[in-house]
Length: 141
Image (spheres, rainbow, N blue to C red):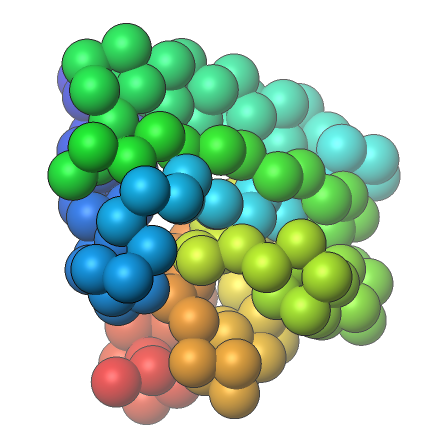
């Protein structure tokens, strides 16, 4: 069940990223930035996020991708530290040119990265964070 939910989320968000990046780039891959902890206290969760996204991306790509576009995952270690997460998210947006960002697992990093995504006119979705403010008063339109 959890695998199905993650696959559905990844597909929905990737479709949104594909549509948001426009028809002009229809032949290009959809680059998804995965900002998750590979070091620190949430390393286990970060590894689970990575494994789940890799399995889902493989299934989606094997089935023809999203609107004919392949998903490419680009990883950065967010360390569950909001300051580090925003620096690495900025790299993912500006250098790696990701279309979409996911993978944050702690609420403080999610909230910081969501603001950065909004300033960069990009989509971001959390995989695990639970703070109510993420979907209420701090939710990006």
